[in-house]
Length: 391
Image (cartoon, rainbow, N blue to C red; front, side, top):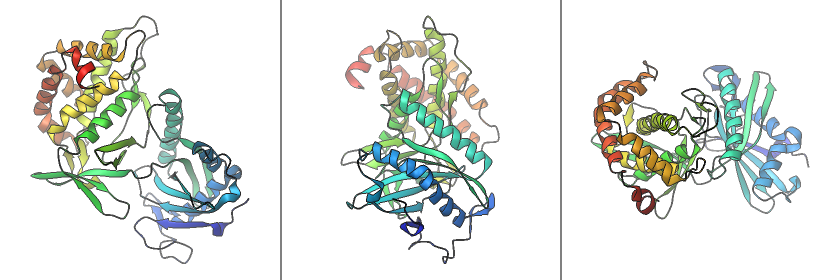
């Protein structure tokens, strides 16, 4: 079956009704940095990408969703809804309506700038690699990636898994009354007061630690709460969390030495830098996602530390099980005095972009943050913690 153009419908989140050539938005720029690339170019090129190679990406998606026996002729229509505008590319939700009345959902990420296409290429490769190497972490599965030439230039795309029911979230409110809001697609929010949302940061820390490679020091970085990199699904009790983007997966401190005997001192030193950076950045957000930088309530720190150890507990290194890795790391950190930890924290901040607007905020809270980390690490000193309490 070859779907015709009229079998595609186009929408934009927050705008009522379908968009077409008669809509006032049709000829507006997709992004300010590429004024010649219009919304019309986006929808037309997105349609062309989905149709590429006889709908290869959709067929891969059908296979992933255990619908490999569903022929393309069972697709009655496809809706492309532009969801938001990101720093590098623009995610759209693709709804595939089947004759059976079932609806399959995908995300279609689009980049039109050179920098955006570069990030997109890196992300598609990272997601494909991590799906092979760390399959237990539910990252979005990539079904197809490529480019489409338009009248306004090249557009890069990749089609991937959509996590249904998961919502972006951000800190909101005044300094005296902070809470977390989950954002519904219709613009409404679900408020969550502290400490009810602290578990989200525990899960985020666990995910990032599970994806950290102990031997090569490779990790997911950069990531940002302000960019909506994590999304949450409210459950009857608690939340489920997903990381939905991996812009880069590399070592931040160089390449580890040749494999051979396990160098636990080197591994723990690298892991300590990862841990400190994780603890700092896990607390950073912007009010409502785009306004002033803020720090998540300090009460979240024990949850972040617990999430880190849960992630470490899931690993093996040679003959060392997860509990042994946790104990080795605690022994390593217990040999540091609070002054040394503070010194390494300051070195970590010195590695950040000095003009970054969040730096003054971090510096003001650094001593208090360091004291909380020292206190929490001190509570991890008993090996029984890893076996009986946290896991």
